[in-house]
Each structure stands twice: as C-alpha cells, then as structure tokens.
Length: 337
Image (tube, rainbow, N blue to C red):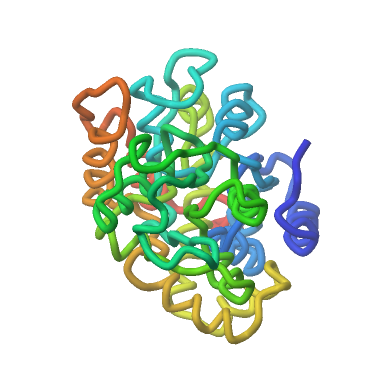
C-alpha cells in the first residue's frame, strides 16, 4: 500500500492525474520524506508532469530495506534513494541480499547530501559519543556510512570499536531511537534537522561540509524496466529537470510549495532551508549526476564496505544515457499543445 507523503501531496497528484489523457505514461515512485522531494512537488504544482503526459503516483518509505524489496517486487518503477545503497547492493555489501540478479542503475541526481549529524541534548561533542550507540537506516549502506566517516574524521571514532550501531529505518525512526535513549546520534535529513533543534537536539556536523562533493540521493530504475519503458521514463526526466531548474530561479515559489507540502514548516525555517537547497550539497543543478560526488561515495564505500573490494567502474552503478536522450528529445505531449 502507498503511504502518501502528505495530504496536500496526495491531493495534488490526484488532480494532476485526473487531467491526463488516456495512454499517459504511468510512473510509480517511492521516496524518502523531506524537502529534497521539492522538484517532484514543483513539477506537480506547475503542471510539468501533465504537460509531459506523465501520470505519477508516489509513496514514502519507512527505510531503504523496505524500499529495495518493494522495488525488486515490481511495486515501483522509480525510487529516490541514497546512491550508496545502489553501490552496496551491486557489490554484495548490503544489509540484505537482492531477491534476484543486480538490476539497478542511477540515471539522474537529486542532491549532494542534505543531511546533518544530530545528537541528543546531553551530547556536547564527539568524545561524548564514545562508548554509546548511534542509529542508522541500514547498517551497511546509505547515510549510515556517512555517519561512520564523519565520526572517524572529526572524532577519531571507529565504528564497532568506539561506539555501537543499531538499524532502525528512516528519519522518524532515528529520532524516535534518540528520544527513547536507544541512541545518542543519527544522520537526520532536511528540514527535520532544522525543526528538531527547537526540541533540544543538537547539530554536530553538516554532512555536505564534512564530505565535500558527494552524490547523496539519486533517481534509480531497474535496468530491465527502463529498457522497455524509456518512452515513459523520458517525460518523467524532463518534468523533474524543468522543476529543478525553476527552484534555482524562483525562491518565492519554492518556499510556498515547501510550506504547502510540509505544513509544520515556518516561514523562518523555509528561509533558512532555501539557501541549503540551492547551495553546495543541496539539489544538484539540472538534476544531473555529480560524477565527482560519485567518486567520493565509492571511496568511502571502499573503507566501510564488507567484504573489502575495489569499487567500479562507475558505469556499473550509473547510466546517464536515459537522461541525455530525454533532454535531447522534444516532448511529444508538449508538441501537440
């Protein structure tokens, strides 16, 4: 069952889908929650999906393991997930084995790591984490290894030696673990990382600042599906790219859509968030893959992935040919208008 990102998001999707002609490209998507879904929300609000003839339905996952399972079961056509997840599954270094042969590829980028290392109020620095427990989505992939790397760089702390790790799932689950005193630190995505500071949680590090160029989340398809559905995937790509470009140009619209889809967000918090969305580590211009950032992911995975192995080539995890062909085409749906 799909669990909608918000009532507003669900309503927007229903309205957009209702206006589409018979034979529209149908895309089923699963993503994590958070402000980095803004390109999808903008594409809905501005009618970019409708213009491209795309019928989009999407859901929010409780965690990457659930997400990948549903993806491989054919419940979703596209997922937005940490790029590192794709590499981990490709190399047999994930928390669970794939239910079949490796069949995933990242085809366009989302963001460069809009996440923060947050701690409980009683943690005053990296030294206070030693001997305690941190919470992650998945133990062996995703932003868990970002947490390990930051703790190593800044606190000289080694995973499973200086601190313990528990796998609990998405951002809400990680916050719950900290509130219940099961963990003292976790990686928390935007804008939740802004909101929870008002509740007493502390910001210890900005992941983007700590890691430099980093391919955070990416849009991913199963290669077997994409080969047979490129005519459906191409208009989706064009709609998301158009929306991402608009975000960089129109602050007022971006903030309005953010607040519509995240009703708890104040104007003040939205004003703080927007520069992060369009700045270093935020949304990637034109929704492209950040190849320099991809290389950073591979380097970190070589450090923490088990069994140890050399990562690559990049073409094993990334295929930008769908993206390039989509942007080189004229939209058939738009051309009829």
